[in-house]
Amino acid sequence: PLPPSHTQVSSREGFGGAMAGLSGTQGSSLPGGYEPPLQGGGGGGGGGMGGSGSMAAVSQLFTRLAQEIEEQKPKNCIHFMVDFLCKHYPEHLHGFASIWQMDPDLERERHEVVNFFKAHKISTAVAAHFTNAGYDTLDTLTTLSPDNLVDIEAFNNVKWLPGHKVRLQQIFGEISARVRAYRQQYSESAHPHRRHHGH
Image (cartoon, rainbow, N blue to C red):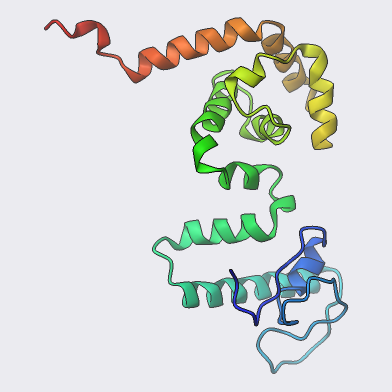
């Protein structure tokens, strides 16, 4: 929970609007026009667009992060900053926020899905497209076929690279066998000395 002097940023606002929303409007989530700077005093222009507007927004973000870190005194500042960005700007992180902010009970299964894709040379970003669409366990992946891939793309409003799409079609052409092989390999690598207990 943020202190009342800070604005909660709506995920529907654009980056510029979200950045402008960081200054205090007493909790209003409505996008506004010009917002005064976080710390008063200062010259120059209002919330203009373009390069200087972006730099002002970045500067404001860093100021806000510094204030939050000062107030909350987190044990791990890097994790705190990533949490902050995931909470306030998930739409700019292209699926990363959903992986970072996982429900702890589902975390292991979702990590399994990500690791399954990594083992097949598919990026974490593409793996996030599947978890975003609710295919966040290996068992749910086995219900998909190559024909379903277009639905995953459409749900995430993305277009995969042709090379990734070909690999995904190959994977999902034999998904049950690949998941079984992955689970076997994972099980053996997690318990490498299982066969040597008699020594």
